[in-house]
Length: 376
Image 1 (spheres, helix red, strand yellow):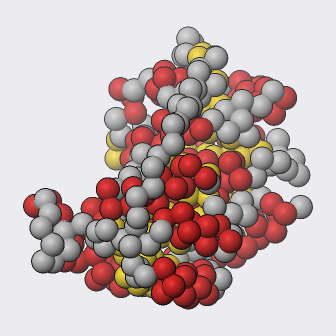
Image 2 (cartoon, rainbow, N blue to C red; image 1 turned 45 degrees about the vertical axis):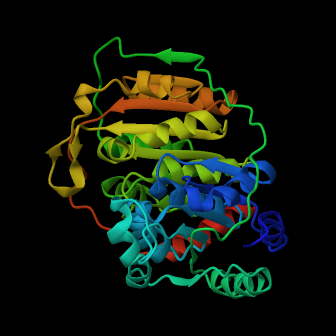
């Protein structure tokens, strides 16, 4: 078996000390090391963990993602439509529950058979992690070479690979909502384009706008392309987790994650993670048109939910319903003047600008440009 502390120290020496993931018994000792001695963000699901890691990478970290192979399916979307087009590297460890010939629970049987093939189908470089420390150190050097080429690398971890590592006593993070202002008057229902235009008009040199996939990113690009913009493609529901990773690692920047109702509904568990870790430099804006606008306007179930109360219960310091554009401007100014993790919910009209083009800049160029912007 690998001495977990020594292996973790080698990872640290190579620059990997930001971890995120979802627990697995095969990886528990490495996870315990990460919690004890590094920065570890516990994600609600594996896809969110990949998005958090991607944001942390743009913020200057070399991220590590830990997951059970049963959760590999949950991570397929951000692995293929976020990491791949944006050329974002990470170092991943995925357990091999259900390994053929090793007794395990029935739900792991099929995934145990297909884990390597899944990684190969997603064009992921991978190896079985050796249980010999000297060989494992050489494997880490090979993995680093891959990540330095802006590609992710995964280790598949068999049962009993890591020596026991005791989890030291943890102090729970307690997030408390301070402000919750709910809807109390009629909505103005501006267009998304009008809301995004207002946000753009308030831009300054240290603000980053992260736009969720679909019409939001396309309209923000149409208003004015900017080096401080990030246009999410695919990986629906991941913009807030991406924003969390970036806000935790770029505390000198103002990070604004612009979400949609369909996107937020897809990965609502992210709210609890964001609320718990609570970066004050993150503003999470929900532009809610009660529709999947990018795919034809099919209705969502957002009309049944009180997102302000949900965000407040999740630990956002401020959670505010915004009725009109003037309130959106005031709320943005309030957040900039007194930084606290803030959630804004604004209902907007259905539909989008017509005609509406698509960004002409390629995703990896958006990433590279934003990295340069963040360094200023």
